[in-house]
Image (tube, rainbow over all chains, first blue to last red; front, side):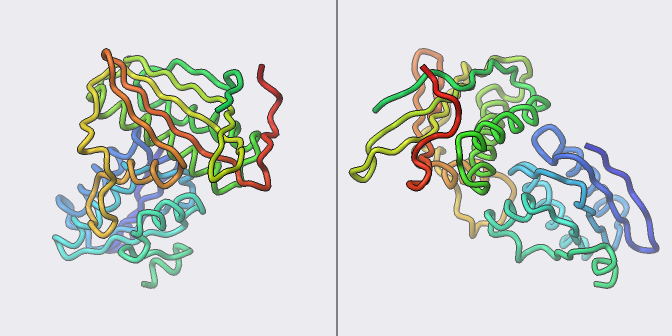
Length: 110
Length: 157
């Protein structure tokens, strides 16, 4: 799994590729929490276009990121969910608690 | 109940990096057996989550500990009809799971953790857990849809 960051004004876009599973979810969690808790980034957008698989530990990392964003009054936005990632969030009944968009443009406009 | 020979047997170390390999194998196996696409993904997810639980909880995230994964076709009578299915057995030698905790949490409870067991239970028809003589055994069974009751993969013995 790889994560790279792009900064656009008050927004950080994290481009993630690979699987967010037990082997890698802690890295996603650490980077997302750092954005909110240490850098106080107002808006973090996760680009999941290149993420093929998310397991329960990955979902937990996203939920923790969302809670951290709310704690500091920031926003966590997701876009580009693969069908498998969408299915996992749907199965977890978490689709409605996240801000989710199809494209980066729509996520940036939100 | 009727069982065939093993379709897949893997001896795995308790390393999270191996999970992507197992997912690939499970996806291909379930596709070859004739499960619908959604059930292939669900079964793959179930095995992935079960292995993750073993790594994290039975072995306390210690790498290099042994896990056995075995899959075979089976035929059993359910609801008065003979049906083919896939039997998956996972064996580890770590700390036994607390039976009281072998329940998935409510999905209305939005918090990290506790989802894995729900994913497993949601994906299979049978889930049995047994711990005996320092061996923990998780057995999962998923039956093929009635219209596809004959497995498509090459015959076992």
